[in-house]
Length: 160
Image (cartoon, one colour):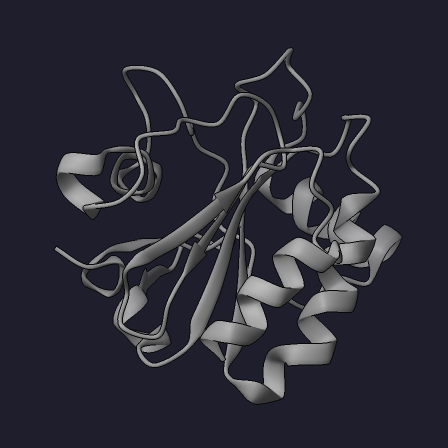
């Protein structure tokens, strides 16, 4: 199975086939609006604008799994991200990124039996998973690694 075989609902409730991202490098991030790391949404947008014309996508997944730091509803999350951080990258429906009700995207990203590379579940909001152009999990970055960090950008550029 590849990342591009999956699908999930957008923040608007529409089914998004990840095959639409085939051939692109994707950075998947679980986000929350009331977290100390929420300013990373600005860095996410900066990174997205810089690389999107080179075949790059950021896919944001709001979740309330960590200390109830995403209390907003889908429409409020979208409004928050767009109004406060001018986010233009795709945002998906609020869902679980850990636990028994984990969404299928994060189930794939965190299960080495499924993705062939990584068995690391998010430890907090803003954990990042880098997907190569073929739909393989290439790397992951913990919360403390900003989206604009040199280590992440170097890995991203090597995939572009």
